[in-house]
Length: 283
Image (cartoon, rainbow, N blue to C red; front, side, top):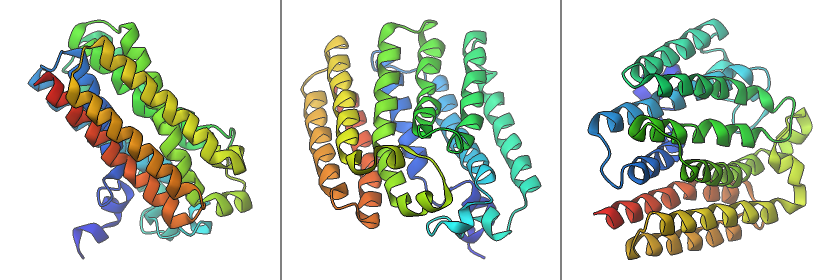
């Protein structure tokens, strides 16, 4: 059996690292913003490692929450819990192991950051169940993905300034944009089985709302670039990010599953480009 075929590897999505990268880029943006381009190497290692562990834990608890519906959705029918390759008890044991490892990392930081990490755990565990009760689970995902932002500021500076919350809001808007694209892939299946999402909520106005979230995200990132006095490399990166957002709009316009998924994946490039712009500006 290849390592990618291992059900635990698939359960943690180690074979599909896109989610890890989408969580990593805002964390790296924050590490550079908070420290004027000079992040503490130890804090950098802690947060990058934490990104990997928390994303894996999030995938495990998500599949646990969806174990009874994944088999009815084309994209998720082969997930380990849906096929029975992994039991619910084994999945929960893996989830708590990953959470324990992540918490052990946080314990090396200051107490204020440790307290903030409890909120991160709550959001990570809560998000997968929200699609049963609200059409806005993507908001909870954005908060879960973005909670590393105030944690990074606290760990790096001992404070959470206004700019940190602006960046948090920007990240929530970015997640709302790309995860709505992701939800569009499952739209027909979600309607049939009653799963809620922003894609179901916005319906035929999905592209419009995604565009609004993209605009808010890019506007805040432009404002932060001015606040932190970033240079030409960042402005070029921001321009390229705007071009990618327009490209994503073209992809989702026809509402074809493959193209919506391609638009979702394209956000990894967008996040990477913004990080390179930040990196070069501070360099």
